[in-house]
Length: 473
Image 1 (spheres, rainbow, N blue to C red):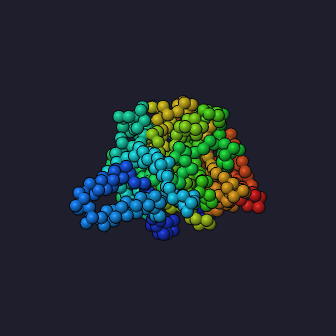
Image 2: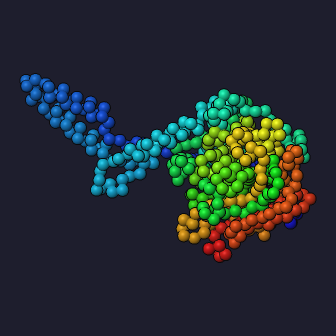
Image 3: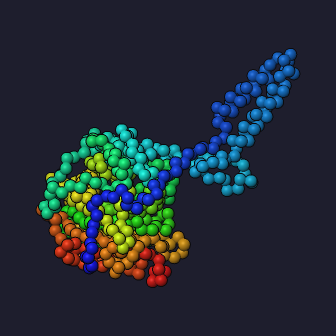
């Protein structure tokens, strides 16, 4: 590997061209089209009765007023029978000229369901910070975060930091969170955690409300998920650590994503699959843009009914007031130029058995309580590192969604994406290098991988690709 001029930046530069033009998310206002309500109709009828009950002596002078009132009732009924032309997300009727009757009941029920979810997810903040990319970061009291809606956590508070694995650098702390929302210099107060606010638009982008914030079953042969990964198995694992190169791959379909992450896995690949996942991802469906974002995920039943991304359900307990899970990472790597990576470590606390997450060097993000899992309540049986994309074939051929930098592994440093310093945690809480490494690129003409080792990066690999190309039709 060409290490000449190698540099991994740990300093954030304000002039980094990562977000040269701040993005402002348009806030759409939902306008509900409605028929006359029973109350409105009753009120109008009552007005008519009052007018008609006037004595015969006064009827003729009031006749013009009655006619005007009747015209008013007719015009109101007609205007409310048409959908409102506006920025409302409610769609127009299929044949507006053939049928002027608007039936909003299913859509109104959908919005009621969305609002109920939003009320559950978005907790009352003590402070809100506006990010340059349009995100709203709510500072929520740590004991009010979504995790504590779980029956087994209700009434509790976050735990104190655990013992870190042996072999992990001591005393090295990075104050920077490398997230765009902190560029203003504002942070959440002590005793609170920053949570990216979920909006109606986030739900409306999802293929369904039920699937919002969830992955589909992880099966590359059945669901269009494709991987380029390194993995170890055949032993008992209690954690994993790596530095992950951050890029902004192009995602060509709104229902696809591209991610780079660590998987900590237990159980079979049937319905009992347990996973803990952390890394960065580009997901237009989930976030509404193409920025690389720090994310977490967990499941205990192979992505069927349990688990979610980030803090979109009760599960992961956040303990840090500087990291917003789901927020955009800044800066990013530039092709044939400066490179940037983030350090991530997941490990099982020997004392309480919970799975903790560290970002950078020294920033504890929080933990997944052990009771969430079945197999992972004990240990992991596999650890994976690498990239994953969704290939929906929405145009009838392979997607052009990129993995990593969008370039194949053979291009190497500054051009292909990488993972470096891969390690696992053993039963005695020791960080160890990987042994008996396997690699897998299930669509190698679209995305590939190359593994190496040296004294600077330890075990590392380059991976990724452009997706659709002459060898990947």
